[in-house]
Length: 489
Ligand code: AMP
Image 1 (cartoon, rainbow, N blue to C red):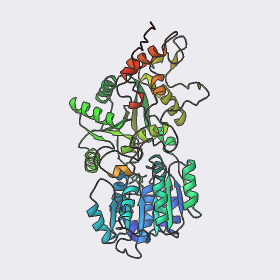
Image 2 (image 1 turned 120 degrees about the vertical axis):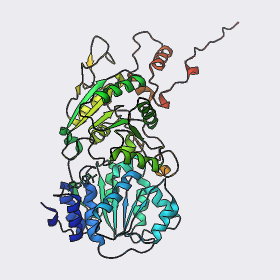
Image 3 (image 1 turned 45 degrees about the vertical axis):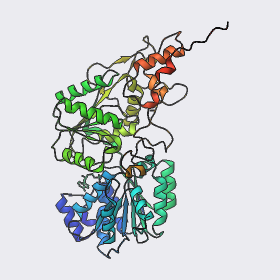
Image 4 (image 1 turned 30 degrees about the horizontal axis):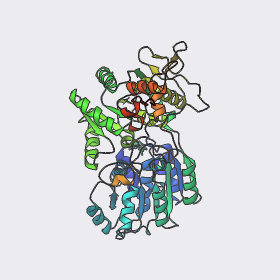
C-alpha cells in the first residue's frame, strides 16, 4: 500500500515524501483511515513501529479545516515524559512543514510564563505531560472544552508512573464528543478499564511487539563479579574491544548509578553523556542532542529517561545492570537494530542476576549466548548441582521466578510523574526503580551453608552486599551487633 491510498491531504503527502517515507508502516496503514473517519482508535503498538506518524499525519490533514482560539487548544496529545513530548513536537515540525499550525509544548522543568503566552495566541496542537497540563488548567490559563481530538500515548507507561488518576481527570475536562486515539504497548487490567470508560466503540489496531523483531540484534552475556567496580572494568573492556562500535547506550537500573558510571567513564577518558530523571530539562535535552548528533559516543541512561526515545542508528546497547523486568530488556535492546540495521546488545551479568536472565530468556523465547565460558553458580542449589546462569530455575515456594521489580501495578517501576514537574525527583513514586527487596538482594548473596545463625547469615549478606544496592537492602551496622544480656546476679 502507498501513502496516497490512505486519504491524507496533498500537503501531508508532500511532507511525507520529503521526510523520505516511501510506504506506510503497518500501524499507519491500519490506523490512518480510521482517524480520518473520526473513529476512536485503540492502538496496541510500541515506539519504533511508526506510531507517532500514525496519529500526526491524519491530525495534520484534519487540522487544515478550522482555526484555533485563545486558550482553547483544538487537539491535545498526552505523553508520559518530557522527552517523548518533545519528540512528538519534532514530528509535527517535520511533517507539518507545509502547514501553518501553532504547536505548543506543556512540559515540566521549563518556564510557565512562556507556555502561558503561547496558549493565549491560540494552539492547534497541544502536546503535554499530564502534571503540567493540569497545573495550567488549575490556574485557569487553559480550557480543554474546545478539544476535538485527544491522543493518549504510551498509556501503559502512564500507568507505571502513577498518571492514571491524572488521565482520568483530563478525560473528564475534554468534551464527551471528542475523538480519542489511545496507544499502549500492553493491555493490563487498569488500562483495559480506562479504554472501556473513555473510548467510544474504538477500532482496535494491533502491531507486533519488538520482542518478535529482535532477530537483527546480536545478543550476548558477559559474566562479572558482584562489585560495582568489577562491572565498570568489564564495561570498559567491552567498549574498547567491541567490534564495529560506533556509538552505544549503556543502561543502569538506578539514577544514581547512571551518575556514578558517567563520572567513571569520563575519568577513563571516554566520550560520554548521562541521561536520568534527576537532571533538569535543559541538561537532558542537551545530552540527547549531543548523542544524536554524534558529538559523544556513549549515552549512559536509566530506563525512565530512555524508554520510547527515537535515537536512530545506535550500534551497541550495554546493560550495565540486567533490568529487573524482562520487558525493559526488550525496550533497551530495541534501541539498536532499528530500521533494518543490525545491532549488538551485551549484558553484564553478576551472580545475583540469574533469575532476571531466566525471565528475559523466557520472554524472548531463546537463550542468550555467553561470551567465553558460562559461569557455573552453586546458588541456590549447592555445588553438587551446578546450574548454568540463565537456565530456567525451578520455582521455589510455588512463586514464579520473576524479578523483584514486578509488584502491584502502581508500585511504579519507573517514573516521571507529576512531581517531576518540579526541580528534582521524577515520578509520583519519586523513585526510578523498585529496589530489590532485602530478600531478593540476599538471594544471590551467598548461602551460608548449614548451622549458620540468622545473625551470621545477615553479616555475610552484609559483607557481600553490592554497594550499589538500594537503601532497602541495607542493614544498619548496629542491627548486626551481638546483643549482650546481663546475667542475673
Ligand atoms: P515511532 O514508532 O513513531 O517512534 O517511529 C520510529 C521511527 O520510524 C521514526 O524515526 C520515524 O521517523 C520513522 N518512521 C515513521 N514512519 C515511517 C515510514 N512510513 N517509513 C519510514 N520511517 C518511518
